[in-house]
Length: 389
Image (tube, rainbow, N blue to C red):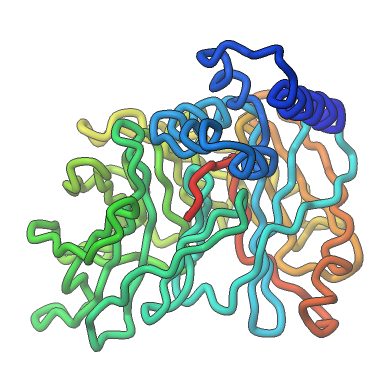
């Protein structure tokens, strides 16, 4: 299916190029609609064809509409795999039950993820240490180094969010300090940078006292709101903090699980969801945020982990959910040339497996042959993005 689509897109792009050389002209108002259906790699070629194509492709409204259309297509899983002190990003197009094996696509690598994991937010990834924080676009293979944060603290955590109204990306940085009374490391300062303006970091004056709960707990951006799991000043319990990317306002969401856990913040049926395993009952628990303003959650539990205890999938862990509503489980390490990713559908109560091939072969030219390669994260929602950083 994907090969057929690629051939079709190539024919369309070739026809557009041919039409430029021939007297037959395509109506100008139809060209943007045609271009929206082409992959980023092809559009990058069009930038060198004419000023007309360049003005269309680099137009903010076109880039925004291209991203919207790209988000309606089947979205890829993005894997972050670590080995020998480096991290590599791969994408895997999940074609559902018709796929039993797949070879991922290499996207890029980075020296250091530093403290926070790096999810893809509408096609962009933010990664790196405070001294060299980078935003990368795997679709265009381009990156942009952000302005250095002027601070002596090394405890800095970053998140990237997207405002679908203005089409702006913003990077939120949390600088941690010690709270004198409670002795907890809370956010001493929060700064935000609008990627399009590329100016300086702006200090956010008003925010609830909190800190990032776990360094390896991912954040999530849905409909212009950034979510991450936080620890509060007043209690050791966890809560979810939301940050409106457009207004730059924070909102604390209470009422979630009240026990210690390391959740995966993911999207289930379009809503923010805390995904975590039950240690005592071997069940998968999903806490779905129904109404943030009312702090209303819906809890679901599924008995599936117990079936994996005495199986070859014992070392598979929860990572995320995909667009089909399936829970994605993957091993903690890549121990051989192939490994399996499991997809559990809680409503259908079905489990399918996809064999992933070629990770080691793709990584060998970049790294030494580590005995094991660690899977840091798996996220759904990787889409094509036209932003040329």
